[in-house]
Structure formats: structure tokens, C-alpha cells
Amino acid sequence: MLTAGVTGFATGFALILAIGAQNAFVLRQGLARQHVFWLCLLCATSDAVLITAGVLGFSYLVTLYPAFPQIMALGGAAFLFIYGALRFLAAYKGDYAMQIAGTSGSLWRVLATGAAFTWLNPHVYLDTLGLVGAVSTQFTDGALKTAFGVGAVLASYTFFFSLGYGARLLAPVMQSARAWRRLDVLIGLVMWALAIKLVS
Image (cartoon, rainbow, N blue to C red; front, side, top):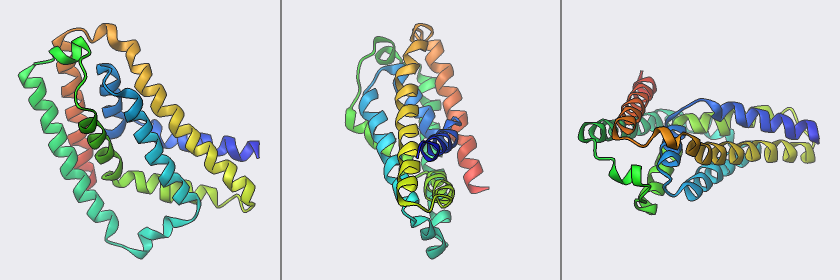
């Protein structure tokens, strides 16, 4: 069971390690010290739901609904483009008094944005329902499959909370509007690059 759990943890961690739209948003909120716990909990729990569905064998949804990936790609690309534009606009305005002071914005706005980054991202379905689900098929025993799923879920919680709270280590260098402007420009570029990739 330990081997299955470690395999699940390694698989889950590897899939979410790359800096994508969701990770960039969690990183930004961690730097801003805004609702980090609830955002990390939302992202990790959303992953847990999808990973569980993948391990239980619901990866065939994509084959049942062939248009599903394309619809998600278009919706996700539109969201990423708009969010990227908002980051460029924020960099242009340069008003980062709240971020520098650590003042909190709306919890519900942060959670809604985090949910959109999670559930409008077609890659999350490929990774969780598809890839994690596919890897789990090597474990035919119910207990081993469960251990694999628990390991993958644990990887998600470990990653997001480490990213969200670990971002605070960079806080000393984020005490100027110039630093926040550069971060927003970088995030905007990442969002637009991902949007283009989704529709190309």
C-alpha cells in the first residue's frame, strides 16, 4: 500500500508542479497575504474531487462528450485572456497600496476567481480525470487503488498550501509598487500565453 500511496503522491505532485494559471494566482495571493488558507483549501479540495472521480473511473466522460474539451478550452481561454488583461491594467495603473500593506480584499471575489481558474481549465480535467485515472488502473486491488488516490490528493494539499504560504518568503522583495508591477506583467504574459495555447 505504501508503494501505491507514494506513486499517487508523485503522480499528483508532478502534474501540478508546473506554473500554470491557477498556481500563478495562488502565488500572487500568497504574496499579497490575502485569504491564503481558504484559497489553498478551495484549490486542493477541487483537485481532490476531480482526482477521486478520475480514480473511480469517470475519465470516460471525455469520450462520451467529444465536444467537452473544446468547449472548456474556449471558455478557459476567454477567462485567461480577460484575467491577463486585468493584470496588465493593474500594472499600468500601479496602485499597489493594498498589496504592500497586506490589506485584504473580498474573500468571495478571491474564491470565485480561484474556482474559475480551477474549473474552467480544461487541463485540470485531462490531468485528474484522464492521467491520474489512467495511472490508477495499474492498481486493481481496491485498497491499493484507494492508497493511490489518497496519495494523489495529499500531493495536491501539500503543493497548494506550500505554494500559498511559502510565497511569504518572497514578501521582503515585494514591498514596492515596481515589484508588484513586474509580477503582474509576468502573470499577464503567462495568462495570455496559456490562452493562446488553449485555442491553437
